[in-house]
Length: 190
Ligand code: SF4
Image (cartoon, rainbow, N blue to C red):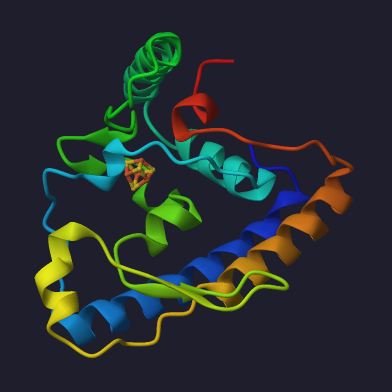
């Protein structure tokens, strides 16, 4: 359920997402890279997400799906969380498909969080007080990335703007709690 407080923040968030998507597309075109899936599917990698605004936007997307689909997603999320709890005991790395992915397609593509949007392309990032660091792209595009000059894809302004939106959102919703959740944890039945 979207509250009146959420609406202006969702607008800021979607405007930021649009700029990320544009920058990603431009960089991908530079390398001639098209994501067609791969054995190292990034949707099988669990990332932590730390922003209330992104979580609530994702949940607003979940609320638009038909109930049977929501129930399927939530059942998968329960299984993913159980699998993770088991690997925490054994210490084995976990590769398990995101519960939002169905037949290779993200069921909440429009609502997917920042890290899903930025993944895959060689990029750079400057953390506060640190020197810029350059990171490689995913393995699926490795040969394309290696055979072309680096196209500047700087995540720093996106991270900075996301932090600002989150800070303003926390203040407006009077919620300063820390957040560290995977997608599966976000969509668990409440
Ligand atoms: S939210 Fe969508 S894009 Fe992100 S990992 Fe899950 S299925 Fe993949």
